[in-house]
Length: 112
Length: 111
Image (cartoon, rainbow over all chains, first blue to last red; front, side):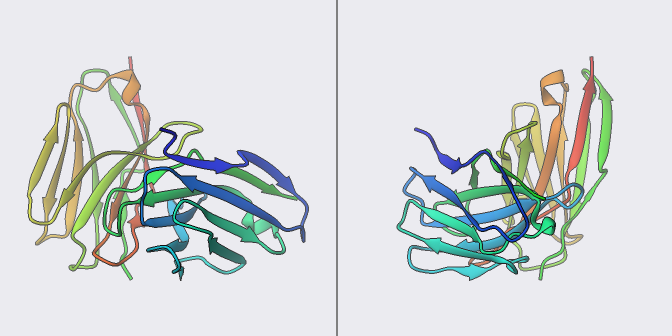
């Protein structure tokens, strides 16, 4: 039982490049989330999907897009990467909203 | 939106002593308060949680207390061990809404 799997684990991009971070969960959870973690700022929500077919903006959505591909998968896309998007990105899932969230081990993204 | 504040940002204790981390929240409608432990290079892992209809919850050496009137909740770790060294995050949420996390506490247990 893998839980929440994120790929890739590390990535270096140049400013202006695009990429998609992948997330998959095998717990049959309805809700999925994307966070970024920066030093001294805790975890900030980028986007979330309360259920398959829905997505909503979180606290810091600018510069990102998401796709809930199916119940298992929730991807995060950076269309034109900027140095300010250098961060550690975490995907999480929960059975429904307001339930314990299960996190992946993160994607460490550097933008030069 | 909700605002969660967490203190202290760093905490050092001797092995065997107790550690206490405190969080305050602003939204009186928040009703779910989880605590997460994050080890280096890993994602946060839930260690204990509490809902607003309960004032205290314990799980072995870990306990969480909630004061709804004052809008604060605390994590208590007793008989600390070196493997308790990590970053701890509190969070608050309510039904149909997103989680709001504190900024984290780096706990070091000195052998």
